[in-house]
Length: 367
Image 1 (cartoon, rainbow, N blue to C red):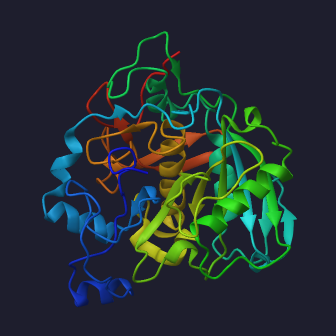
Image 2: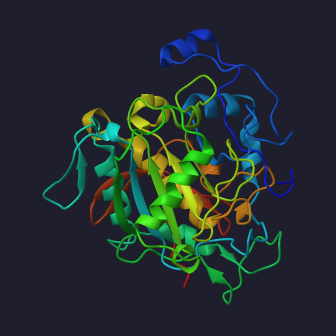
Image 3: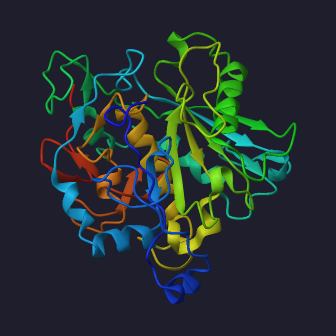
């Protein structure tokens, strides 16, 4: 992957004082050079962490260093990877509850899969979120539908004739798999996460490239684990996404017999508390899972607009549509806020709109 086609995107925690870090309970990451001079957040070199959600501290440090000024440019089309730029059909989300650490599975009154080893209720909240997308006439997903593929590389607008990102009418949740056959790794590599996503494709019977063309696999790791270094001094991030064929994945690319597989590394977000969004929008108990829906929504939005990174939509620094609007405050047209789906009210961040050249929490659906 060349620097021009796949820019490093990690947002590691650097330059903060020991006192500030101690307040959040994390150790300082060693200082390092950014992978790209224009990279928004200086940090460790992990180019496969596409669309990575930085911790709030990491984002705030970057803003203090005036790096936020690089967020003003519109996104450009990357030309596609393996012929894939964006999710053009109705997005399908498959939730993978990975590892025996999740405990015993059950079903609640609403039909959601519950886990006895899920103290914060993240698995259910994820299902509610994905099932609610595309319902209640919500227009948070509408922002994403302005992006397309099959156009000139470097273009910043989409003609009406192009294949646009699909709207998840009636909900995006397509399946849930509890893979508790073995324990999830304590520190899974990118390759291991991708391999789990490929196994999930097989489990769901998505055994052709066509069946995975509009699918994404959300790999949920159990509490106390550190997938790709999450919640460690070298992994001050909240989540990221990629595809199985990325040769820069830690551990290498993962071979898929089912075509290209888009997946997200979704750690147990509440293990990071306020650093990954707890109570970012709502106070008290109502906001304990704010970070879960903000972070998981961020990765969903970036997967549908950049399915095989970085063949989709990124700006001149390599930032995707969610990156440009992460931890930018609350309320208004571009801040994080509650969005109502048929499955409940969810704290969501805005995403970047090329039409408005700004962060937007809603936009009319582009046919």
